[in-house]
Image (cartoon, rainbow, N blue to C red):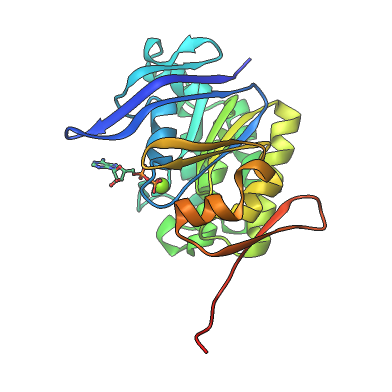
Length: 260
Ligand code: ADP
Ligand code: MG
C-alpha cells in the first residue's frame, strides 16, 4: 500500500512560510493533480512529500513517516520528477536513465540484469531508443522532459510525484506522457501526484484535484467541483469558460475580451 498522508504540513524558507498547515490524503493507486497559480506552493508541496526539503508536521507514505526513512529507502518508495532537474552535461540518455536505478543497487554493487531491463523498458516506452546514445545537452526541451520521466519510471517506485511533467511537450507528447503514466498507474498500482498547469488535461487524467493558493488548499475534490469559472477567476485571475468536453472531462477555455 502506498497512500500518502500529509498533516499539518508547514514549509518555510528563510523564515517565510510558504505552506501553511496543509492536510492532504491520497489513496493508494489514486492520481491527484495539484493545481494553483505560480508561486502557490505546488513544487514545494511535492518536494515535501518526497522528503526532499525540511518541513514540520508529518508526511506518511504507506503508513511510514518519511522522516523515519533514510535517503535510499525514500528513493525506493518515491520518485520525484522536479520542475527543473539538474542535468549532468557529460551524460548520455542511457546514463541518465540508469540514475533511476541507484536506490536499488547494493553498496558498491554494479548494475545487474534487472537494472538493464528497467532502463531498457523506460527507454522503450518513452520512445527514446533512437537517441539513447546522445548527450543530454543536445536534446530539445521536450526530448529532455521525456528522458527525465524515463529516469523516474526506471526507478520503479510505488509513488510517482511529477512536477509539471508536460510543460515543454507538444500536444501529442503531452497526451502520450500522461497516457503512459495512466497505463503504469493501472498496471503497477502507482500512486501519482502531478503539479499541472493545463487544467483541461488535469481534469481528463486526475481522479481528484487539490487547488492551492498562497500555500493553502482552496479547493479539493473531483475536477468538475474544483474547476469552476469562479474559482479560476478568483485564484488565477483568469477569465475562462468551463465547458464539458465530449470525452467526459472538462475543457477550460481562456476568454479574450477584445476592446471595441
Ligand atoms: P509553484 O510551484 O506553485 O509555482 P513554489 O512551490 O515553487 O510554487 O513556490 C512557492 C513559494 O515559495 C514562492 O513564493 C517561492 O518564491 C517560494 N520558494 C520556493 N522555493 C524557495 C526557496 N528554495 N527559497 C526561498 N523561497 C522559495
Ligand atoms: Mg512549481
